[in-house]
Length: 207
Image (cartoon, rainbow, N blue to C red):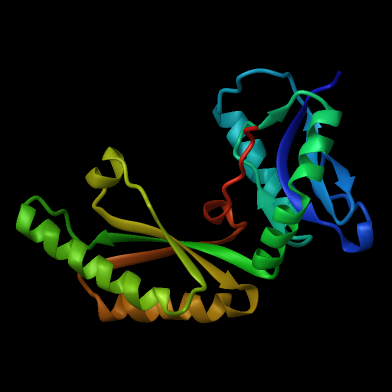
């Protein structure tokens, strides 16, 4: 049995199987396909090379259409196991693909304009950052606030969030971030993307 690393589930046009990313194949089931490549079965450590490969594959495939990213390092024991999973979750996956079709994700990182050491000043920056998020949310269909780590705190990151946007509204959202940056001179707002909807997909593999 050959194990398969799953990168994503994609929508297939009329059941056709396109070449989505170099070095991968598509295991199709009706109107969806699993983007895969051979892999060793077992616990996978998300090392730098694998993380880079994961990002590269998804960004290539994302250009072709709607995509549900799998958690990095996801490996199915065999083709039959993955086929059964696609069949079992077919309607859930197609519903999810229909929701994110023609959508992109943008990540906004808000940092303070200067290094903040006083607790009260930090709370003030957090309040300003929360206000900016509320305004940006009005331009998105969904928002996820992302957790921060110790390095973020050292770098003055106030808040980081991901926004799900219709593809044709990407430039308008970019303009909104620029306007908010000018409105809040104490903060720096950095927008990255457009990305696949990493932060809006939670695949389940139990059972």
